[in-house]
Each structure stands twice: as C-alpha cells, then as structure tokens.
Amino acid sequence: MNTRTGNTTCLWKKDFVLLILTGLVVMLIYSMTTERTTTVGSPVPKLQPKPVLCNAAISEESITPLKDTRHFLVSAFMDRRVKGFDIRIIGIFRRDSIQPLHCSFCCGSVFNQTTPATVLIHSDHFGFPYGATDVLCPLPKNCDASYITLLTKPSANASEHTFIPIRNKSEKLRFNFTVCISSLFGDYNNVLQFAQTLEMYKVVIYNTSCGPELNRLLESYSQEGFLEVVPWPIGKFLKPSTGWRFSEHGGDLHYFGQIVTLNECMYRSMERSRYVLLNDIDEIIMPYKHDNLVSLMNTLEPQHPNVGEFLIENHFFPKKHFEPSKRFHLPQWEKVPGVNILEHIYREDPDRSAYHPHKMILKPKLIEQTSVHEVLRKFGERYKVPLDVCRIIHVRVALRGYLKLEELNEDKRLWDFQEKLVPNVDKALKRAGLFPAEEQKKL
Ligand SMILES: *[C@@H]1O[C@H](CO)[C@@H](O)[C@H](O)[C@H]1NC(C)=O
Ligand SMILES: *[C@@H]1O[C@H](CO)[C@@H](O)[C@H](O)[C@H]1NC(C)=O
Ligand SMILES: *[C@@H]1O[C@H](CO)[C@@H](O)[C@H](O)[C@H]1NC(C)=O
Ligand SMILES: *[C@@H]1O[C@H](CO)[C@@H](O)[C@H](O)[C@H]1NC(C)=O
Ligand SMILES: *[C@@H]1O[C@H](CO)[C@@H](O)[C@H](O)[C@H]1NC(C)=O
Image 1 (cartoon, rainbow, N blue to C red):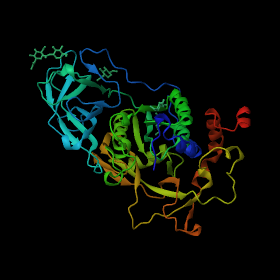
Image 2: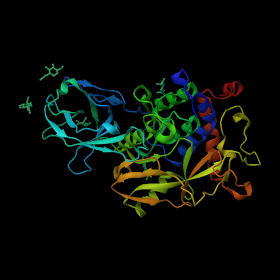
Image 3: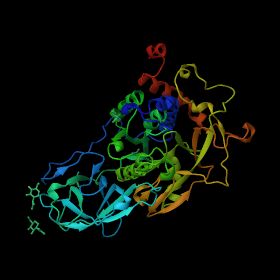
Image 4: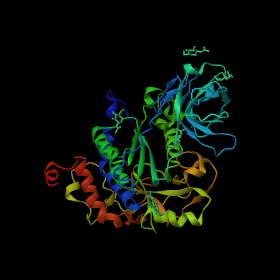
C-alpha cells in the first residue's frame, strides 16, 4: 500500500530508489534487443497548436474537463478505420452519467455544425465510477477540423466550450518499437528499467509524480529525444485508485487511469511506430531465439500477417534466489539501491491451473481498444507467441514462493547481453549521478 504524503511531487521516491538498479538494467536490455533509430538526438516533436482561428478556448492539457458534464477529454485523433467515423476522442467518462453528445468542430472559423457522437465505454472499468471511453465523431462536410469538443445540446454556444486539438495523423513512421509506460506512480516504479528501455527505442511515459532521482534521469533522456513524458495530473481531477478493483481499493478510476494512458499511447504512436509494447517498466520482453526484437518481429510478421496482438507470457524470477557464483555482484553496483536482475536466474514455471497474465506487442493499426493484458477490440487476429520464442523476464517477489530452488529453471538469457549491458549500466548510473562519489570522479 502506498500512503500519500504532503509532498506530492515526491510521492513515490522510496520505490524509485529501490528500483533504480533494476530499471537501468531493463532499459539497457531493451536497448540491445532493439535497434537504435536514426533519429538519435532529434528532439521529441511537441504538439504545436496552429494559430487559433476559432475564437474559443483551446486546451493544451492532458486532461480537460468537459463543460456541462462530469466527463473529461484526453486526446483526439483522426481515425477512419470504423466506417462512418473520422475522429476518435479518448476520454474518461463518468459511467452513470452518460448523455447524448454532439461533436463540435473548429474548421477554419466556422463551427456552427455538429454531428452526433457515438460513446463507447471500454468494458474493463473494473467497477470504478469512471472509465476509459472512446467517442467517435463523423466530420461535417467540407470541414478540415483542427480542434474538437463535445456539446450536450447541438444548439449550445460552442464558443463557450473548450476545444482539444485533433492530433496530426500525417506523421511518418520513425520507430520500430514504442514502449508505453503507464505508471509513473503506483507501487511499481522503474528508474532502472528506464535507463535501459530508453537506450533503444521510443518510450512514452505518463508522469503523475516522481522522485528527484528519477526526474533527473527522465530529464536527461527527454533531451535525447527518445523519451516523451506526458504530464498526467489525474489527481487534480479525480481520486485515482492505487488498485485495480473498485470493490477492494475504492477511488474513482482504475489504477491511476492506466487503461486510459495505454490507449492514448497506442493512438499517439499509431502512425510513427510499427509496434507498441505494453509492458511494465520492470518487465523485459525477451526474444529467446532471436538476437533482438526487430529480428523476432521480422520473423513473426510474415508468418502471421493478420495478427495485431502478440501475447507474451510473463515469467517470474524470484528475487530471493541469488546466482551462487556472484559473477555479477559487481563492486561498483553494491551501493546502488535496487535489485540487480543479473543476479536472479531462477525462473518459476507458471501454475497452469491458474490464470496467467500476458503482456503484449501490438501492431497499433490493427487495434481499436486495449486493456492491460489483452486487447478488447481489434481489426486483426491474436497470436500467443510460443514460450521458447519469447517470454517476459520479470524479477520480483516469488509468485509461487513454496517452490524449492530445485524446482525452478535456470535461465541465464540475460547474461547473453552482459558485454554491452554492464558498461552501459555503469555509464547511465554515472550520468544520472547515482554512482558512489569516488567512482563518479573516475568518469
Ligand atoms: C526498423 O527495422 C527495419 C528492419 O526490419 C530496419 O530496416 C529499419 O531501419 C528500422 N527502422 C527504424 C526507424 O529503426
Ligand atoms: C453556419 O455558418 C455559416 C457561415 O457563417 C452560415 O452560412 C450557416 O447558415 C450557419 N449554419 C447554421 C446551422 O447556423
Ligand atoms: C456565444 O458565446 C460567445 C462568447 O461568450 C459570445 O461572444 C457570443 O455572443 C455567443 N453567441 C451567441 C449566439 O449567444
Ligand atoms: C497535419 O500536418 C499536415 C502537414 O504537416 C497538414 O497539412 C495538416 O493540415 C495537418 N492536419 C491537422 C489536423 O493538423
Ligand atoms: C513529473 O511530474 C512531476 C509532478 O507534476 C513534476 O514535478 C516533474 O517535473 C515531472 N517530471 C518530468 C520529467 O516531466
């Protein structure tokens, strides 16, 4: 359980520090299993609103309250995959207060025409009063809209409403992989994993609050252009739950809005990234038969051209068991807080009689709505990637703690990356100023 303190910007400091080492290692692994794109060093393009031609308020925020309702708008995207519709708004809607809504547009200077909105609440709201919601809108004829909002009455004065930008869909493909991290808050945190993931591909992270160490790391990566930090001040508007089930954890919205951010990230990445990985920051999607994710997907894609949802099974490596040779118990990491995932090489077999969650590699153009462990609505098919081809390495508290060491599987796949991993972790730790003082000087 997390408890809130008065200092909201440092809510999760302790967790971050604990995970620093793990996060770094995981990030670096990703950096090796994917290929660096050619956009090294180019800044992340920020959404640049065009000169406003409509004399209405435009919101630049990640979460915008919708006037005359209890709902919130998050982002709008061009999306013509569902027949009859042009724009999809991702929002957070109060489920018991859904009313008919009308899409209102800013097309040039005229916004006096509305179209009927179709409201689709995602099915995985877990009983919370608020849920991730899509709103589909057709564009009126002859309207090249740049901004959109929703009205409760078609006759409402749209000038008095706040519009949100329609995100530009004519972006070019620039990344093979984007990792969507919904969780800069909550009790899994990931400084460590960060440093690693970032070395290699685009990462989008939703930041509610974070500790100073992590912030330093985030800022340095944002400057390099691989990390996009989306502000996610959900606590300003709702009482986000720290858990996943309303009956148990209470609050307004599932796990800080995780479902909303995952979907937002997927749409945000649709044009610019071939694949989107939805995994937590302390989980590594690890190919076992290929050198990296690019080569894994180059093999899977032609075999399964219609698949949009690749399910990868999660495998737990209990952190209580250490590899005996202590080969990777490195002196320079000793004082760095966190789990050194290279030291944990014993893998639990999943209990096949119980539900076992997956994480996913998605082809975003074939996905309409996603949840955390599976896709809810899609245009393509699903494929469970075989265990010997790819699985998730997840070092954590044992799930089946009663298993004896002899009952676990030795798995040193991570070690295949050690040659680059160790120096890269060292570099990242130094850069973030997280090395012991005397080591820091040797840089
Ligand atoms: C994506 O992977 C392909 C190999 O399948 C490679 O040719 C291409 O350069 C990569 N694109 C980016 C943006 O890294
Ligand atoms: C909308 O505005 C245009 C141009 O200002 C005007 O010609 C048209 O009659 C208006 N339509 C409605 C329904 O008010
Ligand atoms: C709509 O609201 C704007 C801004 O408050 C105001 O200037 C305008 O006169 C209103 N239009 C109508 C038809 O009420
Ligand atoms: C998107 O960008 C293209 C070219 O960069 C531009 O022509 C178009 O108007 C933009 N669309 C929107 C909705 O901003
Ligand atoms: C993350 O959010 C906190 C709280 O709003 C803010 O202080 C911090 O600067 C943000 N970090 C980054 C890297 O955007």
